[in-house]
Image 1 (cartoon, rainbow, N blue to C red):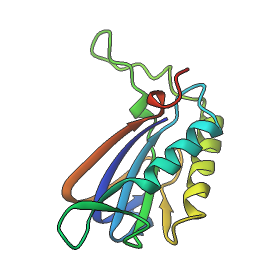
Image 2: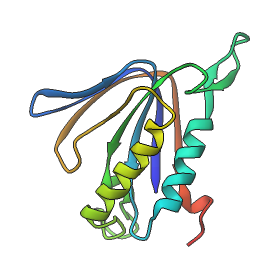
Image 3: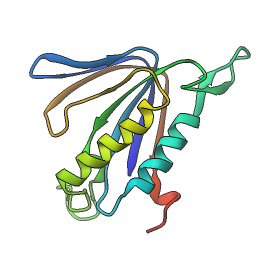
Image 4: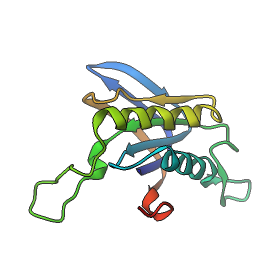
Length: 151
């Protein structure tokens, strides 16, 4: 799994001009599910995300997690994170998980987050989404479970 995590003051996702989900202070997470990913990768990614300390403490140091600040999380599925751009100029997405499996793991991942965070929003899997956010910092972190789960 691949994730782009942005610390935000607010974020939202709309489909066909209709608001699907919105959050306040927290994380905007773009999630790519790679072929061969399983619950193991989702569990590890959720744990790492929940423990990520990029919110400022009373001394101005990035030392607090999203749980520590009672923050929100918005997760949007984005298969394009799995793009292979090694050849030519047109990305290949063959390393992306099949849609049914990607959606299953996307929902599994968001359920793991919902067990710990009060407000976890999602996009609409497979839809053409309009994502808006105010990056706070900016702070952007990239996670790839291949680091922790060598395949």
